[in-house]
Amino acid sequence: MAEIVSSETIEGVHVVTPDVYADDRGFFVETYRREWIPNGSREMIQANRGDRENGSIVGLHYHLHQADYWYVPFGTVRVVLHDLRSGSPTEGATQHTDLRESEHRGIYIPPGVAHGFAALTDATITYLVDNYYNPNDELGVAWDDPEIGADWGIENPILSDRDQNNPYKKSIPQADQPRYGLRN
Figure (cartoon, rainbow, N blue to C red):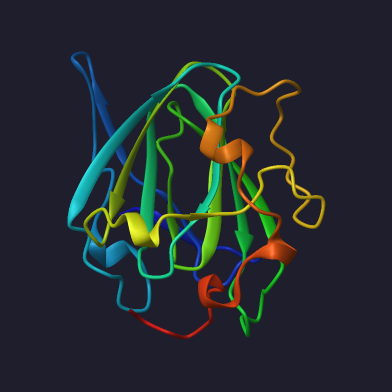
């Protein structure tokens, strides 16, 4: 059975280490099961894959209505999470978690928690989401916001135009501010 560890830093975040079954042919691993996520996990309905070059940063992104589950089948990434949810018991907390292909860990990210990752090597990340892509629920906060204090592990990152232009946390419009306890 997989080991599920609830984050001590951000409420609702869970890190999963599944069982790996290996033999002379290679290995088999279940990367996700809905039952692994405590408190009535949301149903994941779409799967995505991203391949990133060493030195790339993606994020920080967040959604008001979508949860994510990330898994890294190739390479190493540093996941950065920040609790943007107003009223959360961990509001304002930042968490860093490295995911490596050799460890087979996944991470569940609830709505309202800003998330991003730095490719510490060339890497592939797969992610499951519980809503179909909705451009109106694709929000962001500055990757280098000093209030968040992210340690990306990269000095000169490769960034998209979008991620270079996300606002600082203090400039997020009220309508885009996540609130704790709302399940949408």
